[in-house]
Amino acid sequence: MTPTYQLTPWQKKQAALLYYFSSMEYLKGLQERLHALMGVTEDTVRKSRKQGRNKNTLAPLQQEPDRKISSSSAKTLRRCYNFPAC
Image (cartoon, rainbow, N blue to C red; front, top):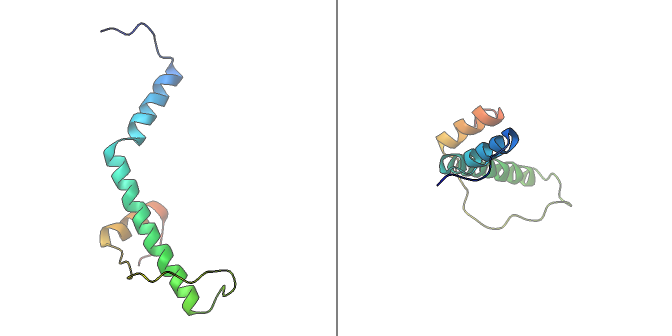
């Protein structure tokens, strides 16, 4: 079946971007980077609380087991966000 309409060059670019950013490979990579970032953030917040920083502005952490960052997640953080070695 042939479409009865033509996409403009701008619409073609938008369709390509939507296709890329909704691909499973991209979304899995994004999820991995977010989990790694959450682990680093939680570690930083725990450290600041142990040191007594921001006593009045931060609510206590919920009791949960420490989340370890996998080596692949740490590599991803260093590569994508220029984070220092963990």
